[in-house]
Image (cartoon, rainbow, N blue to C red; front, top):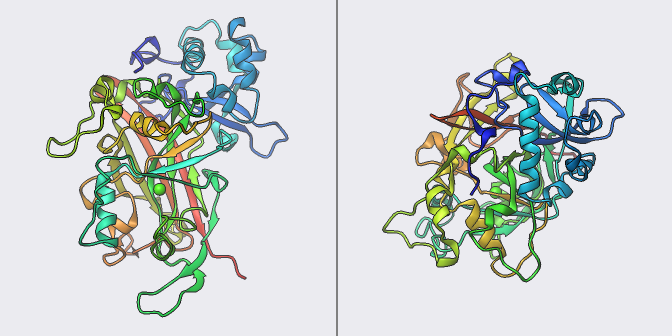
Amino acid sequence: MIVLNETHQPELRSWVASANDDQSDFPIQNLPFAIFKRRGSNEKFRAGVAIGEHIVDLKAAHKAGVFSMSLTPMLKTLHKSKLNQFMGLGKDAWSELRLELSRALRVDSTLQTQLENCLVPQSQAEYKIPARIGDYTDFYTSINHATNIGKLFRPDNPLLPNYQWIPIGYHGRSSSIEVSGHGFHRPKSQLKAADADAPILAPCKRLDYELEVGIYIGKGNTLGHSIDINDAEDHVFGLCMFNDWSARDIQAWEYQPLGPFLSKSFASTVSPWIVTMEAIAPYRQAWSRPADHPQPLPYLESHDNRSSGAVNMHLEVLLQTAKMKAGGQVAERVALSNFSQSYWTIAQMVTHHSVNGCNLKPGDFFGSGTQSGTTANSYGALIEATTGGKNPITLSNGETRAFLEDGDTVTLNGWCDSEVAPRIGFGHATATVLPALED
Ligand code: CA
């Protein structure tokens, strides 16, 4: 577990004025990473760190002599258009850079003049996927979500017996993960109505979002060697927002016996920014398992996991329909939940994933699974909020949604706060549903 240090001090202020707004996602205590360039320019994509409404161009800052000479090998990895090599350096390297950046961005820093020339406004930036995601694994860690979905697919047996013992997951598809801002076409595959004799090939009718936390692996492990739960978080670089779009009608027909396939692989959306594990340290919470539930096997138990394995991270879904957009109406909240309610922790996901010797690599990605609370306004997917489409939600302009329609824009937001630490945010994961492509 990461111990709090001077970079977390709530009283720190930056000479970048917009970072001192208490509603900013990116105060000086956050310092998340992205890959960016100026929109429409011929510049190369490279690494940046968010501060207020700006981005510190790390390559430019390196060249301007802002950092210690000892950081030079590390900084060279940040000239690249992917963070994988930097992610593989491990937490001591990430922490050294964070400390120097924090000091350089503070009010009264002697480096202000040099660093001012290395800022790019976020309003002028375009982003891309911050890492080459070799493998993407989708977990299923919200017991509320698993129970709600289970009731729809298996009313008599909603929660399968393995759920309370294993962090359930499956191997997803990384090639179709895109950064916020990209639209995608409504997917087609086989659909089979309950009363039909045969399936048809058609555009999905039950398109859904999934409110998830994305987890980027930092340092990997050697094939054949598992990761002890006490070391698990040392292998995690950071977190982002993640919308794992799902086609529920495709899923219903295809998912047995091997699980989801084309119902998930057509698109997923990540937010551009990765908030490091060090940045979320002040927002950790105790993790517990109800006393009448099975307790984890010893390899999934640790003191730190019990005392601070959970993350107090608020998770929000906003929806803006085409009609709302045309009428100048802003997106409205359709769900609010919290990652602290997850049945399994990040450390348990990492440890279980590797217990068979499977090797994780820098830039590998986990989806947490849809994070749902216990009430209808906290359900992280429409299939839960509408009970399988039977009870559509009503928006403030009178429109209803059982599932998503073409032109709908979904935005996921996340933020951490606490009584003793400032709010830090994760930015947005936004995408718009486009009509199915004509044959
Ligand atoms: Ca998912």
